[in-house]
Image (cartoon, rainbow, N blue to C red; front, side, top):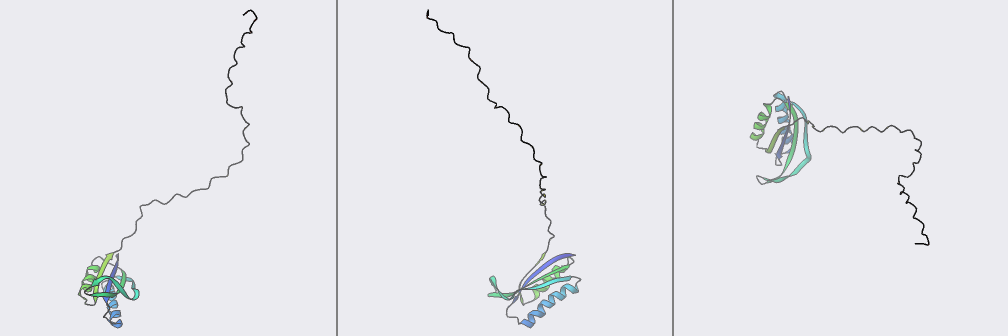
Length: 143
């Protein structure tokens, strides 16, 4: 069984009782055809503005239904949604399983405490001493 979401917008001219019957009708259609309705949400709890006017209508009731079923049911649901005059727009999509190809971050392990080591004895400076020059000959008076 696959998971699907159906979003449809009901016209605001439909009264509340008829709107609830319409939502129940589409939920019943799913269960009658072997599907399982997971949840039905009324987005916004009332009228919402449409992004753009559809048949000169600027508001509607948004309904989101999540269900599981075989692959043939969404086509039947779309057929029924398109026949209904009270439904302005609809969309049925298949929900994909989320597969992450990102590797998890490696867990950093705290380094082990280092035992204190006695400081190394200071070594002599590494500067080379200049070679001593030969003593200059002494000057004599004869010269």
